[in-house]
Every structure is written in structure tokens, then in C-alpha cells.
Image (tube, rainbow, N blue to C red):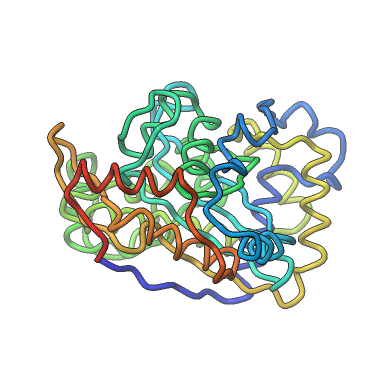
Length: 344
């Protein structure tokens, strides 16, 4: 199964990053926000973040030189949305790698399917990627993404569905067309019908999450993106006063590894690339099969993890010199043995 790259306009890119900075609290809004920034202190060294070690690199000297050069000017951030169990002990229903590419003045968004069969570092098991959050919170999820995808992510931002619900209520609701299948699924929880409706925060979350007759996980992921894009589009119309009010309400619902000084650096990066900013959207794995394994659970099984990671690296770093690490090769082989799914 394949998903093609999706393109969005410059406007959406600017709005997305504006909203991202708003969620983190812009330094320029003043000291009154300092108590509201919920920073989670994490280690920053490569080993504790499961960033690939030199001895595990599978590239020759020339390939590595070209690859390292391609990485310069690109910063990767992990956005995590947790389910109704919240920040403590929940699961990561939304995982998006945000790649800020100052070389190409581009922001690349890669959604990672929550059901992706992956290696979980702490328990040394193969499970759904979103189970990593239950084992060690956002740090464990970031480590799992780094380990499985050969990435170098050092920071995260976490939000829960209550945060999204609050955002929808703050802007006066979410206008959307609900089709017959979505209305059927939502009807089990309230009075919903086919047609145009204005959903409140709770209704918007329900709309985001139904799946059984509503396109499965792919349908749910699309509705999540649609809702987030609506929020971002609305954000661009906010005046300064409304932005301040919105930030005050939203910040208690955000957790992040960023400090205020980190945010200031992000703003500097964005200021240098915002003119002509373009955005790209991807969904990982690019090629996969839906398989029910011996534990009775359905998985999105990459076919193979190795080939999917090569495509991911090409998308993020525009690199043709990348060769998967020994770690990714081992993970890919194990996933093939567990699932019987091989490269297409």
C-alpha cells in the first residue's frame, strides 16, 4: 500500500509554524507566560537519545561526508499527541516529525502511523510504535523514532486531546461536512447526522477519532490533519490580543523539552526562512501491509523497514548517499521474520 506525497501552499506552512511557536509561547509575548511553559528536562547526548552511533554507521567515508553535509541546516522535532489517558501512561496517537530545512526554506511534516511495527528500546520488544509512550513517555517515543528511522531528534512537543478540544472551543467550533459513514460511527455517542455541522470541542475530538466505518486508521489520520489545518488556518487571522489570550489558555495543556532560550533559537531559524517558505507532507511507512500477528493485534508492517527509512531520509535530507545503519538493518530483518512481510 502506498501513499503519495502531498503538497500544501506557502500560506499553510506559515500558519503551521506560527501555531507551533504559539503553542510553545513566543518569547516576545513577555515574562507573564514563564510559569505556563511545562518543560520536561531530558538528556541531550546521542547515546541516551538513541541517535545512531559511529560504530553502527554503514557508510564509507565519502558517503558519510556527503550525508553529514546534507544534514546541516536541518532540525528535526517530534510532535506527539496522546490519547484520553493523558500525559501519564497514555499512548501516542499522533506522531509527526517536523523537519525545518533552512537550506531549502522548507518545512517537511512526516506523520508516523501509530500502528507501525517497531522496535521499542526500553523493553527490547517489537510492538506498535505508539506503545512506546506507555513504557517511558515522550522520551521513549523519541528514542524509538530515532532508533527505528535513523533520525537525530533531540526535542519534542506533547499535547493531549483535551488541548485540541479546548482549542476548538476557543475559536467557536469546527464547521465540517460529516458523511453517512462518519455520522453512523459518531451516532453511537450522540446526535450526529450527515451534512454540514458546527462541532464543539468534544464533537471535534469524536469526529477525529472514529474509524470503524469511516476509513479505518487512514480515514482517522486524514480527519486529524483536516482539523489541525483548520485550526492553523484560523490562527492566521488572530490579532495580537487574541493570540495572547489563546496562548494563555493553551499553554497549560502543552508539555515540551524546550526551554524559553530554545524557543528563541527556533524563532531565529524561522525568521531566516519564512519568506518563500514551502511545506511538504509525508506519511510513514510509505509502503506497508496491514497484518494481524500472533498476538491478535493489527499492525502496519513496513515492507521493508530498510527501504522505507531510505525513502524517509531522502525526503528529509535530500540525500542520495544515505545507507541504513546496522541497527536499522537488524530491525528490518527482525520485522520481516516476525511478520513475513518483505520488501516490495
